[in-house]
Image (tube, rainbow, N blue to C red; front, top):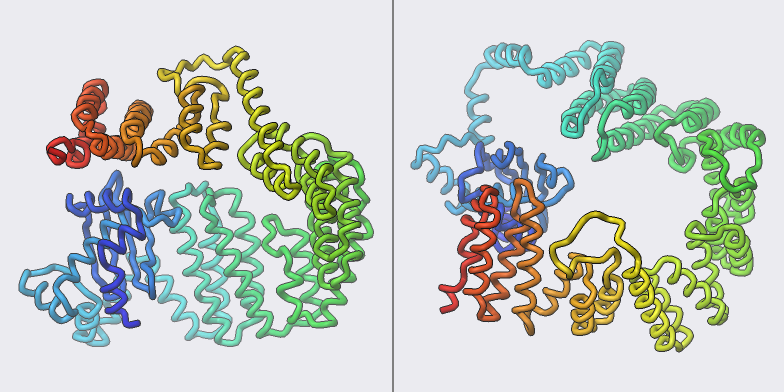
Length: 602
């Protein structure tokens, strides 16, 4: 598929709506129509711009087969959402491309006196300058551009020889990785970019045959990153990504350098034992081919010597020991490489201080086909782990009982789990086991009766919270939330609706009920959307998009119910009630055409 055909298929409003969703698309369209897209650049298969929202956000879009890669530095964009800012820039791109071919767009831009500078313009401008003038300009620019100067210094160092290049790379990496003050979340992208720029020289050095030097610099960089993590907010995992890059480069350098297997084994073992962020975790798997038989023997010898000093843990509740954790992980990897189940279990049973260890051993035996040993270990762990911590073990035992057609024993355990932790998930699990025993109707009756008793008992308890709700449909510590959720799961919409009105449920379930009743009972849906919309406006402080979206849904339902006039009266009342919330009033005014629908329905 050519880039032009991909662009014509992807750069459409229909595609954007599917990609971003109705809500983000509408907000992005508002931004585009309000002229909030600035500094737009059409770079062929890429586009970039700054979108002015609550702040100025940089957006980068790239056409790839079947998709549009996107990058925005707003909070949603950092979570890889196709946000409203991306939509706004994509719409600007669509608008720019309406001129037809590249040549036609260039002519149209020229006729319009466009100030947009393309890559082709840059190339022509550079080609028009003499070599001497270009050199002088670049050196002058580098004095004010740290990034450009760094790139030029790397190029010059490579020309002066490998020793100079390695020394410069070391300084660049130390300067880029070391943290002198705490770095906030929003600063981490630039930090990572700076480290990646410094690391780029290692790729060139590896190509130049400096594999040993690259190995040493990667090891240094990983140590520095492990120290830096304490001084940064790495919520987006930039440091982890950098560690993966250096780890990959280190492995490739080892393959090229072919170091002494025993020396490499010692370095890897000690690095993994000291690693603070598991940056060397599982290295025996990644480096097995480089180590070869000689290196593996040396590695195993070091591991077994350390393992012999590790005490056996049999009592639940031992404190966490990082050294114990790391050597155990190493021995696990070695045992897995032997493909011997008993070797792996022998490692794991040295530490039975946690219930999950019994479960891991049981799962290993089951995966190996030895279900009798699997059940024995799970029963052993379950017997000493009462309460919620033993839940996974009891469910494992129940599954094994069911496999052996011991349905009564299995259901006894699953029923205990449902009573101890009533939820839709535990209800569904009970259904699964009961249906296997062909006894679901009886167990379903017991489960629903238990939920009703739980609700009745909860309603008799005095409220501990001082919070008073303005609607009875939100009151109660438990309400009928679980019962409504179960009935919705069973697609019993009418009964779920009645239970919700009788005893209340959480907001999410009210919205699900409203959506389910929109077609047959639009007035009911309208009332729910109005109520929750009112609460949403009351809670919001600045951004009212979600609240107004609920009111739009109420307006749509009102139109189907032929209640638009009633809804608009209610909406006018909300505007008066929240007249001091100016952003809310502005948001309603901006979305007026989607809220006041009575004229359209006449």
